[in-house]
Image 1 (tube, rainbow, N blue to C red):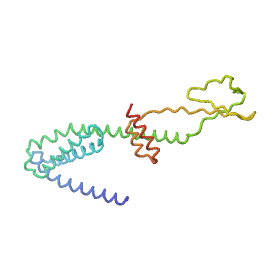
Image 2 (cartoon, rainbow, N blue to C red):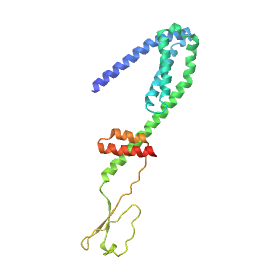
Image 3 (cartoon, rainbow, N blue to C red):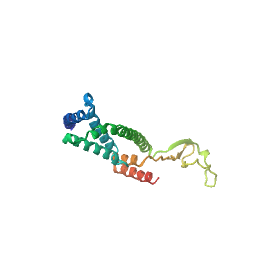
Image 4 (cartoon, helix red, strand yellow):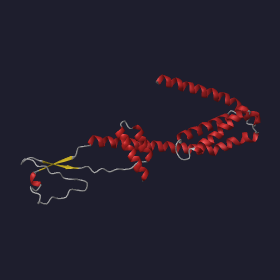
Length: 227
């Protein structure tokens, strides 16, 4: 499987390199026609580089609100590249010269989108890691309480004797044991739940190894969506 991946990756790289080389020649030609002279080699890099940048932004933003924007801009850039390669002599000089100017603000905007999406992915990965660690800790401690040692004298022998209330979130359980033996007082753990984003819980559900865990994360996703 790894060998197949390498073969497909190498083939894709060769196709992209060959296509860029051929497209480079056509775009270089219309750059010369537009009067860029010895700087005409920059023109193909601008056009094809911008289309690649838009494709990356669209891929990272896929499934999110506003994903149509990088797709639309990238499609416009691709259409221009297709036009310039298919019928280069029909492209007006004014359009050729306008492309680099338009790419300046649009490429900066695409970079801002990509940077923001990368930060979101890093934050989501950190949240998922923390949630998984918390879930593993809960599983490891499930069914166990925290035990303190006490003597029988600490508790009244009959039901009418006063018993001090336990702290909030803790319930004392008094067991009947022979005299002189310690009594175990079980305190229930007070679980504090912090909600992450709905997308984080959905990702955890997709990565869950058991149906029980998957159902748990889906319920948490519903709770997060309600908040």
